[in-house]
Image (cartoon, rainbow, N blue to C red; front, side):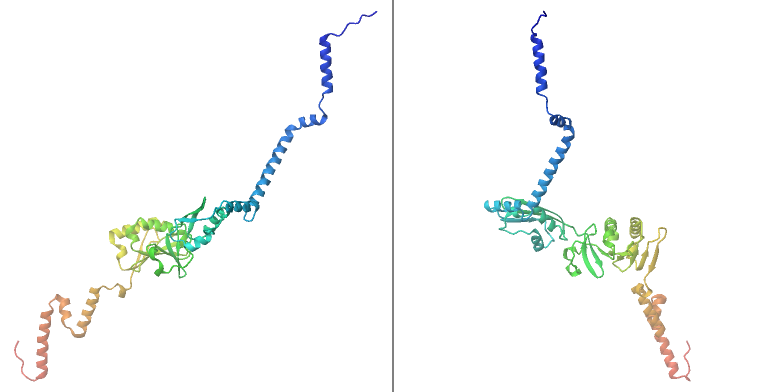
Length: 346
């Protein structure tokens, strides 16, 4: 009869472990999720990011004037008694203050938390004099404005109107500035013609380092939107080339230093050609000097009566000439009075 042996302790433990593994096996869904976890992570991150962006859009929309966040902010400001008590503006020199305050859009007593700094900054920067502005809300009740204005660089004359322009050629003040209203801007250079503002900086910088030339220039005229003419204070015109303006100005300064060219009575100085210079003098009537005019009067006097001016032109002995002429005239008169009478021997 076969002999039965009881199972050993190690066999019982192994069997129980296998049973536990079989009874505690994960479901198919869990196995699928574990296998697809790497694919699901990017999807979850994308959904989270989309939710954050959507929440930000809703928050920004609510923060607009009239939105729920803005309304809550205004209520908190009123509850805390936060109102505008002071408005500080620095850096304003030429910007009209009423225009600046109107663009700022806030007054004393307004809720300070309801004031939009970004909107005020955008409005102020549309003013022609303003180049940049910083607007700050300083609790509990101060609005601070720091203005950086455009600096007028020249006066631009175009079609009979005068306006101020900055170094970049932008119009600083839209309103017409007549010469009687230039005031503190009278020392600014004058540029004339279409296209002058965009090219004025290069020419005026070149003149600034040549004071002997700059002091003779009354205006710079843009010709055909491609080159410059310099109008001098004595009425002469200096025609500069289309290119190589610094070289032409240096040549002009050299001629002024050596020969005082800009002080001469000339109608024009043509520097358009690089290898030559053409000078056109004034008309003879305009170029006559006082000495030449006196000489012409003396010549007319000689032609009319042959008197003292003839003696002056010959040797400057006007008295002797006049005496000799008087004696001759007396002799002629005596001869005429007695034509038949005897003549005295010389």
